[in-house]
Image 1: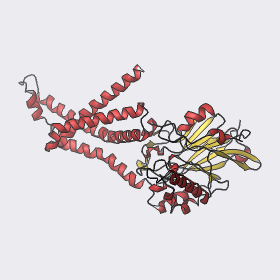
Image 2: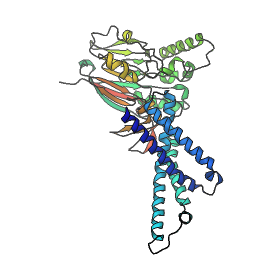
Image 3: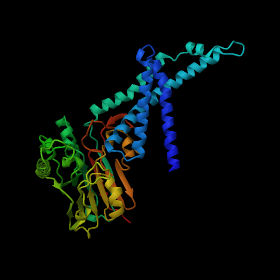
Image 4: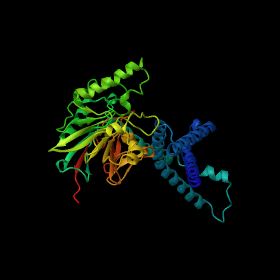
Length: 427
C-alpha cells in the first residue's frame, strides 16, 4: 500500500512539473497578448492541470462512476498527445537558448545580469507556435475519425478452440454483433452496408450481445427492416444490454410506461426473427449432437450498471451438454461471477466497452484508456479452460469515434462484426 501511494505521489508530481514546464512555452507562443501574461491565466492553467491530473489518477486507482472515469481518461490522453508533441519543440527551443548562452558567456567576458540574459534570449515565438500547430495535428486526426470512423465497419476473424466441441460443430462459424445503439445512427445506407458485410461471411449462427437502443424502443423505428436481414441457418440469438432497459431515460410518465417500453423492445427482437434470451438457454442441435447457447440478462460489476442477470435459471437443463456458450453483455461479469463460480461455461461473448471509441490496436498490441476501467475490453481472453470474447460494438454512443489502427495510421471502427471459427482441438 505504501509503495502504491509513493508511486501515485511521484506520478502526480511528475505530471504537474511536466505541465509547468510546458506553460512557459505556451505563454511564449502568445507573448504579445495580454491574457497570456495575466497572473490569473497561470492560476487557471495550474488549477486545470491539478484537477485533470487528480481526476485521472483517481479514475485509475479508485472506483469512481464509469462516466466520470471515462471523461477524465479520455480528456487526459487526448491532451497528452498534444502535450508530448509540443514538449519536443519546447526542448528544442531550450537547447537553442543554451547554445546561444554558451557562446555569449566566456571567462574573459564580464558576467551579464540574469535579467539581461533573459531579455536577450527570449523563447522563440515562432518555434512555440509551430509546436502548438504540430500538437493540433493529432486533434485534427481525432476529429476526422469522429466523422469518418462512425461507419467504417471491419471484419475481424478469430479462431476459438473448444476441446469438448462435438464433431458436428467443428468449423462452425459464429458471427457476433453488439452495441447497435440505433438512437445514434444518422446514415441508414452505411448501416445497411455493415449488415451486408456480416452476412457476406455466411455465419452458421449469429449472436447479438446487447444494447440495441440508447434509451427507448422507438429508436428502432426505421431500422427494424435493416436488422431483420440478420439471419443465419442455426438462428440469431440475442440478449439485453444495460441501455435496453430504459433505466437511463428520466422522463417516463410512470413505471407502467417504462415497462411497456421494455415489452416493445421484446416485440422488436421477435419481429426481427431474433431469439431473445432472458436468463434462459437454447439447445443448438446439429446431426444429433448438441451444445448450449445461454443468454443472461445484464450483469455489471460497476454500481451504475443494472444487475438483472441470474445464472442459475440461465444454466438450468444444460448440465449434460459438452459445451456452453454464454451471451452476457458486460465483460466484467466474466471476472466477477463466471470465473469464480461457473467453471462449466466454456466461452462467453460480450460487448459494452466500445473500446471507449478511442485507442490503438496493432497485430500484437492494443491500448485504450478503457483498459483502466475494464481489464477485458476488446478481443479474446483466456483464463485456464475458459474464454471471453469482447466485441467493441456496431454502433456508437456519445461521439462516433473509432480506434486508430497502427498500420494504416488512421482512425476507424474495428471488429465489427466479428466472425469466430469454432474448431475442436485434436489431442
